[in-house]
Image 1 (cartoon, helix red, strand yellow):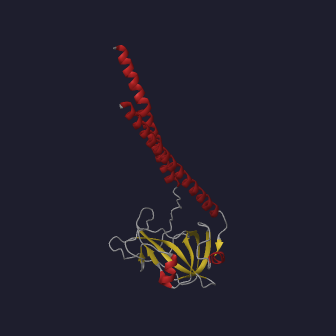
Image 2: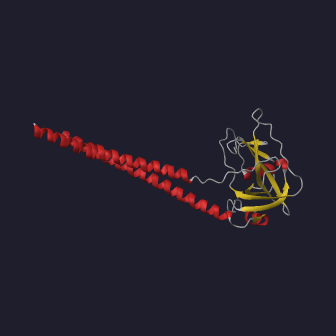
Image 3: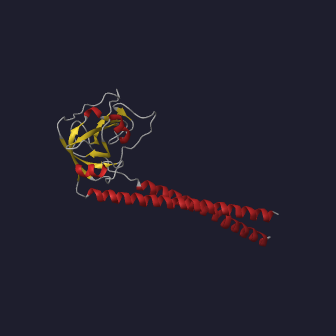
Length: 254
């Protein structure tokens, strides 16, 4: 009866160990797959950087009426137009060089068209005494020419309430913003990369696809898989054999 119970426990532990090892190994493989996808994305972004800058005619032609962004992320672009300063929005909790502050977002009415595009113009620091006291910036009223790069929609932070309104906001959805303002906004975002001006800073961080994170997770899962198999081999195979060998030697001496 005792041997039967031991055998039953052995096979239960074996099945559980193999299942856990298979699960952790597959999760490690999945993380490696995610890393490969991010590497492909980064390669695509790097390729866009060396292409000639887009023109605003390219931007309008590829995005007008599409309802979704079709221009490659991080492609350089040159624009000309007039700022629509009355619709400037400040996105809160957007650090630059570890300092808290705001991203300044202003629509630009493109020259020769009735279309506008949202431009992430730059960054300003936060006033720690009064969050609503914004650093003064200059917004030219004449036609401006700028250089930028195509970007995804601004990353969304946790929202403590519903849709944001007003000048200072936590998040900004371009489609919702277009309806709110009545502007014919193209479904695109441009991050201005010209040298700092108008009281704004533009020390933008390079896009991070997070490949290292996936490699780290993969290492953890593979490490856990190895640990499970190592513990199984030691406690279910090696240790019992050593115990039987010690018992046999003890009986022979007796």
